[in-house]
Image (cartoon, rainbow, N blue to C red; front, side):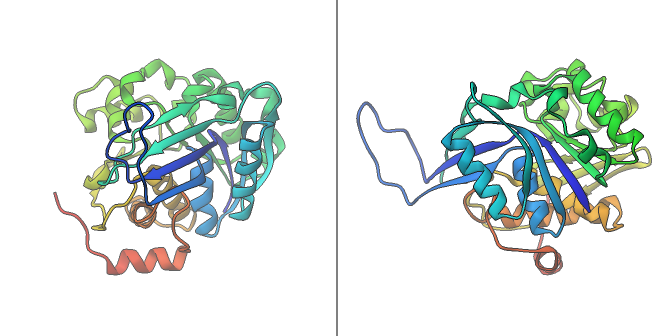
Length: 310
């Protein structure tokens, strides 16, 4: 699997556990503070590399110390960062995540250079030469630009996938519509499906996305697992029962596992099982890069770990 992960790259600063922000000039002690590469492109790249894919990342980051650290973290994980463009006048995107004891993660986020990425930055030859293109956060660059990139990939025989960044409440169908006919695998969460489609029912929302052109929709649902929807029907895949430390990067890990599974010839349900296993492994520690697992370890985890039943 030779994949380009394009789009949102973020440096996360994670603090755990945080029950409340101290008042005024107050201070409190915490157990852990970490900095990790993240984002719907960057975080997905991390787990894809663990699962044995050849990964090149493409996106925009700042020419700043934050960007330097992000490049080092991705490179140390085995991700080729050659196609990350550096902006001298815009900072690298970053988030501060105070992680609650139950794993929830409110966010303080700087959009930074991600929103500046455009067609002139795209490594078109690298896209054409890849087996897969994963576009993370197309709503930041606009549906028309996303459609242009994805349609180019499709014309060159590249398998395409997309994950969303914006919460559902900020989404609109017009932010996706032009790109949908060029997406083989759409990988949103439940909130995004409902918000972007305007539907009240998850299956109806996924079917609206299929009707507009997406080839498959695999929806993550947190502790309720995933729902895989195709033209042939829908199938639920339960989440694995683990003690959750931090949910940061779990959606990106699911995307990585799902896409890696498909690249190995597995069907959509089995690919979703691998995605759920990768997400569960990441959820047991702090940050998108948690865990030293590989493909064999993820498969073994899936075979031996119980699932959560609704």
